[in-house]
Amino acid sequence: MMTAALHTDYSGLAIERQKNLMSNAKNQNMDEIKQTAQDFEAFFLSRMVETMFEGISTDGMFGGGNGEKVFRSLLINEYGKAMAKTGTVGVADYVMKSILEMQEVQSQGFIDGTKTKEV
Image (cartoon, rainbow, N blue to C red; front, side):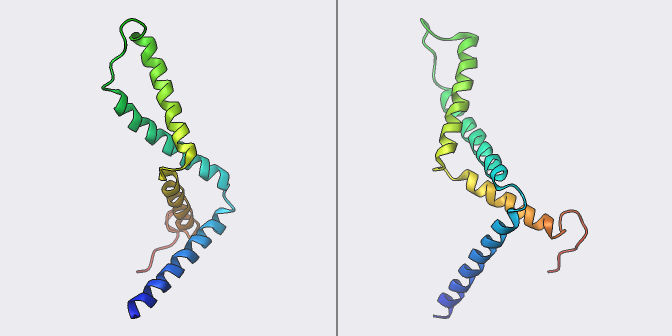
């Protein structure tokens, strides 16, 4: 029973910390943070999809050549953007959380060296 109470307390602390992160980030533009995280996810997914396309050969009659390489890379980038917009993979959520945590640490002065972290 004691561990269940501790777990509940820690969950409450985590939720409270997340609320604090979000309120501190209001000063920074949340839309910019979200867009940056989504752009990173799109890039990541594009690179993942690109490896899937490496083994696919092109049709000799109507495809191939440098033109197809260019258009394939554009298509792969658009696939990554489309997948990132759905938000189903979740990479952007973790990136956004990391950005907010870094901003919190920076706002407390731990990154620029004005404060030392006490253990």
